[in-house]
Image (cartoon, rainbow, N blue to C red):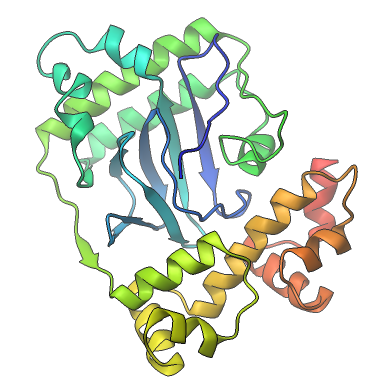
Length: 297
């Protein structure tokens, strides 16, 4: 699915620190016209790219090119990772000589995942650069709630010093690519079973209202087999993944709070009761809904 990141003309991209305890799980498979770079600060995150899972921990640098569909399917509760995106125009203007020319052509056509694990010195420097570049951006709670591209239709990323942001993004792009080339590509991946891929596609694209047996039948296996292989390959139980999808749908609906109440959004997202919603919400964010909502109102 091609999505718009809603980046205004003043900005050459954006940068924010995603945190599991604040960032709603937006788990559908997608791509965008911009190049995306992630740097994992804490915990682990798992993506699916081209039918394979990639799990990355602290110090890992990940690249997602415009042609690559990618889907975030798992994060540990302590996960923190910077998300930076770069408009094509920034890349074209910035990458005119070796070794950066590849970002204007060859690298952009890659259909495989590129990543590397940085040594402590380079990791610390890149982390500090990202932190400094973010100074002056909008509130971290808002950035995490909107997931970067904005659940709310009128959301737009903003920064009080666009020139400094753009300069920081340019340096971040060049430095990140230089570091990528210095280290061996160390992506460790696992090929997903066809039934898991099918289940992920069904859950991502359709409302979550099917029984396990129905989902398994559509995926070509039994319910017991799908539950077992899904947990083994994705890293979380199928029901936990479904609850994460429900949370993502809840936030998308609740962002329209002028017309939708918490209860209406909760049931529309697929939760069967407030008790279930409260349990899943509190486990995901470490706080109850009332405490979290008070920070957004």
